Amino acid sequence: MKISSIISSAVISIGLLALGLCVRSGLKSFTDSQRKVEVKGLCEREVPANQVTWPIVFSLGGSNLPDLYSKVESTNKQIINFLTENGVTADEVSVSAPKLSENTDSYNYKPGITPPYTITSTVTVSSDKVELVRGLITRQGDLLSQGIPVVSQDYGNTITYSFTDLNSIKPEMIAEATQNAREAANKFAEDSDSKLGKIFNAKQGQFSITDRDNFTPYIKTVRVVTSLTYLLED
Image (cartoon, rainbow, N blue to C red; front, side, top):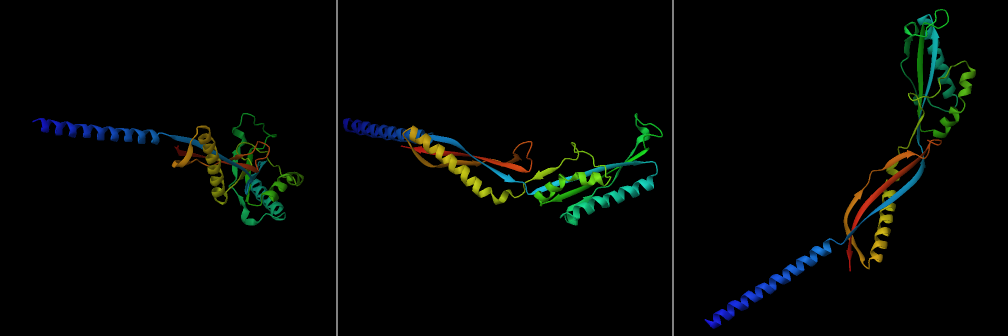
């Protein structure tokens, strides 16, 4: 009986020791798994717009619709000639359907003074020749000198500039943002007397393209932020 009791006690002791070692190992692994650092890396670049859309809007008034429509058609041709003679190709120009307004329904209508009809037409330039079109935009006075009443830009017919070649700079920007994030993680590891381990998790943020400022919409700021989580080692 004594020998049996001794053996049972020994087995129990060994089991408890093994369980303690397992728990200790598990706690250590759990603690190590919690030693992480999450960092963000930013990359920004300024790029010139590579696409421009320029709506040229004008309005003409009159009392005879056929004559008024004919005058609108003639004015459209004048604008197109101005554009094509200065480097814009025909396939970069489009003409929207004219919009007719009956001024007789207006509160400010004055018979004999206000024309009963107004037709608004829009000739739109969509081109990748950004610098060329920018130069023509500054020459809108040439159209006015031909008697074309170009309407000033407003919310509905603003000039827009776009950057559509994001894929050409994506890889480099992601690499730069990732490198910036790693440098921040390394600094954190040094300050905490640790070593930087493997990447535990990585998230690539969305790219954003915005105007650099309100005065130079033809220059864009491209921005991306990456989020990385690294393991820390002793």
